[in-house]
Structures are given as structure tokens and as C-alpha cells.
Length: 159
Image (cartoon, rainbow, N blue to C red; front, top):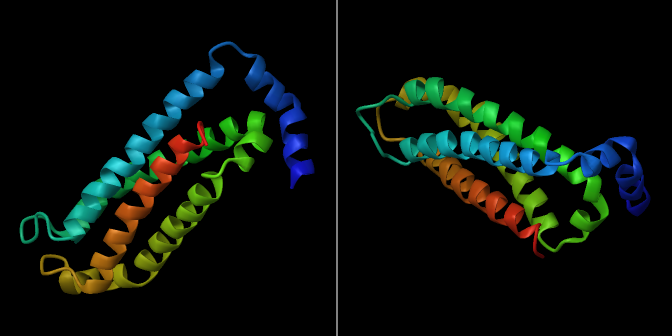
């Protein structure tokens, strides 16, 4: 992997990122906006699954309005995250928080996949009722994993 990371860091693309004034801080800013668009609506949806607004806001309505924004934020965060990774790939990959961030991203992604391919398919049965335990568990895992991804991401700059 070290050779691959060195290759990434020496690519013209990485040089352009490092050599363009204000590009990296702009990427960081856009990345944070992406995280806000991802985590904010996702957290609101998870809180609905955990019972906040139960009997007032159907889960399907919350999903219809919140999840597209969250997906947009995910796209922005992934693209900017990858672009920011390239110029310092070796250094970032060696950080102690890198495996935590990647592992938590994997957990968050698997959780989304399992929820949408499984529990959410029966949402018509519980849309306005008490959320079933598998959906509440998915919500708790989601909240915890996205908070962990965010914290581990900040630690990438320091540890």
C-alpha cells in the first residue's frame, strides 16, 4: 500500500492540490458542508425512528424529505474527502484514527444497506406506529457510527 500512496502523492493531481493557493482550505470547507448535509438530516431521521415525533410524522414522510439531502451530503463528503486524501495519502493512512474512520464508515454503510434492504421494506406496517426494534437498532447504530466517523475524521489532522 505504501507504494500506492506514494504514487498518489506524486501524481500531477496531488501536486495541483498542494500547489493551488486556498484550494485545500476550500475543499475542507466544502467537506464540512457535506458532512453537515449528511449528518444533520440523517440524525433527524434516526431520531424519528427512535420515537421523536411518533404518531405525528410518518417515517415515510421524514425519509422523503430528509434522506435525499443526506445522500447529497454523502456525495459531497466522499468526493471532497478523497480529493483531500490524495496529496497526503501516506501521512493520513499512517494516522491512528484512519482505521477507525474507515471502519466506522464501513459500519455506517452496511447499516444503511441492511436497513433499506430489510427493515424499511415493511415500513407500511409501522409508518405511524411504534418503530420496530430492528429499525430502532439501525437508528442507534447510524447515530453512533456517523458521530464516530466525524470525530475520527477530525483526529486525522492530529493523531
